[in-house]
Length: 410
Ligand SMILES: Cc1ncc(COP(=O)(O)O)c(C=O)c1O
Image (cartoon, rainbow, N blue to C red):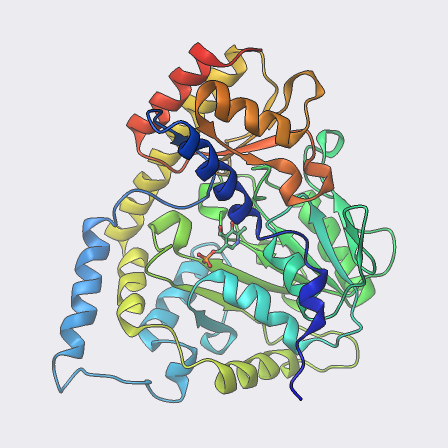
């Protein structure tokens, strides 16, 4: 008799964005004449840039010619198109980080690898996550059986690293010994970005405890302060203890195109392994369970990494960050306490008068017709905060800001 993986029963509620969507749908049904302004889900809205479109067309063209057609690609191709791997090696070189092609694995977006990477580590490894944080790390730890039950909003067996006003929403390394540390930097949902010193504290911790850091760099291209690191490998020693997962989703509009990459350095060693073993395990896992990302998407990614593509993606990031600035300034003017919005497309709003996240979510929806995401959905430290996203067409952002200014009763 087949049985289910009962760990799924431990998951809390529906997936966060599903919950928000349900509440929004109910409001819209009750108020059909109202235009609801959605600043809830972190999905990109602006079209792909001309250089990327050209790259994608090039990918299609190559598939239509017998001389350039490729299927699964060759053995190395499973880990990605060699031209793309070379471009990524050069991308890191410009940041003074030297990587070999064998250390980079092309993925179909960061989420897949952020979740699947857990499969190469032993089930009794203790996982630490920031609180609040992007829910996928946590849910994967639950599904894979690395946690106990959820009691009062916290899973047994998991270590939570609090991010709050006291630490500027950047966590401190755990006090106890853990094995796998997820770091999301800049952080979704708080929008905070760690300094060199703060990341060094994690690298030092990981080296001392033979722990591995899974560094989610999905938003690094939004970092506006040149002194803040854009890769964990800017920190000396990080290649010995960190895996970096990145994506073209948020800075090049690839949320639907799907492409990213994962770095598993040869130098990475964890308890009882030698150099290259972890890299080999991931290569084996991908070879068995992944047949590579779309070769058309890979041509698009190559275009993103070209000089013209990088210039265009900077403008795209600039567009969303102007949205962030408009939202942030307007809310501050209303006297709300607002964080983030400088190194990430997320604005982290403290609820007024100690309202719960959900109360403020409903208030914003009912009074200003604006949809945010309750901070509590990202972890218990997110209670009494709300996340607004800067992903959106400018005209909608302006409408939302005006509606908040006019209608929200504070
Ligand atoms: C922190 C973080 N990591 C990863 C992802 C997933 O990115 P991708 O589209 O590359 O799978 C998201 C998407 O919202 C995210 O916010």
